[in-house]
Image (cartoon, rainbow, N blue to C red; front, side, top):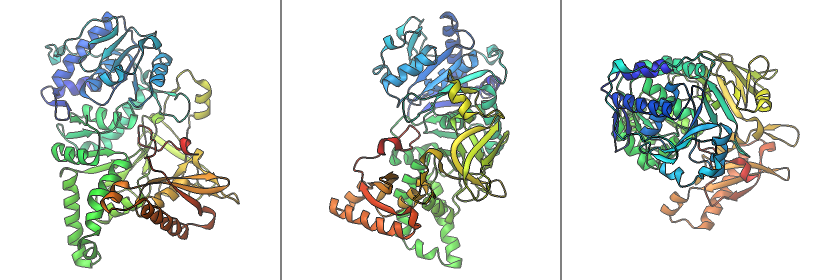
Length: 535
């Protein structure tokens, strides 16, 4: 990974590398200068190979540079999600034994240096100036350097620790996933094989997902940097309107997203227009339908920037109605599956070979199996092993032993089935599964997927209370306001949805009651609902 970073910088020296959307741009040469300066700072304050350096802040070019400077120095990087609470940040910095801490202005206001006594210094991400502790200043402009002067050569082996990534977790403090160099090299090998022929050096990429999360880090930043792309960091709140404008300006070749982003754009800006136009009827006609589908696809590709080869969704299941709609006119979308513990990729298939409702096949260097006596029909826990798998959890041998068995299989905690061709179909989280009245396995995510496609439903969760299934629904209040609906109207619509839902569910999955959730559900950084808050 270190050699690849250096090689990409040298090869693409004069090309633009990193841009904060509508702000400053750094060339690959600029990145080299800043990395060299940070290396000098690390050496001066006594950072050794294997020491920990933490980063916390929203996506930006300076975050990316600090990450690469840490890795190419041979130190261990500890990215921290900016959504974490102050006490979580203090805990992670201390638990990881970080020696330096790069933070954004917003995070700087929320932390207390006294709670992190092991730090040498805290540095402001905006300009690498000293915020607390003892460290020399780093000038805001990169020093002059030539490609021949670059020498990122710390001695590392494939099993050496490169990163500790603290998962979002649901209760208490999250676990520190120890990821070795081989996991990043293997993920890069996969991405180059799967995407390399569709992206050129200089291709534009829009980074929307938090880089402190493995999905965004590996596939919206690191792989693209190694491939010589120009990465634009979306530094604004990622509303559908902001993202649509960014797509238009950046014109990305590949889009990496979580389902929530795609679903909001598709529902608000595409599905409604198509279904209320003459196109919906014409699509049913044999000849005219082909022409109409081509026109719709052209317009949708245009909405995503006009240069799209593929949209890759991961982090959670894509709503079945949205996926079916997009596939009805050939939109190039595919769904992958991964975990922080696998840095992150486990399964994937290109959109041209992707099987609907699945999340692809095991990727290069990885294998999967289902812990079930009938893996094609009976759901069981998804197990995986290979080069991508973590070393374990930092300073937590009990959790490591629970997640990694003696044969090297990582137990994901997810439930799924494998078809005869090796396509993985996820049923839900093992810990979310509900036992029905007669021992039936109920997967709440499958019920939620149906409910989320119903009238005026923005999002929902299914919970078990007093041995009954109940639905908590957050209505689409934005659309309700546009239609001038009252609270009573919304309540009546949800009751109709309740009736309609039970008509398409088996008796043991029937919903006993629905409750309106006025506030949007609280979510993790990857936009999954924090279910434990709504038991």
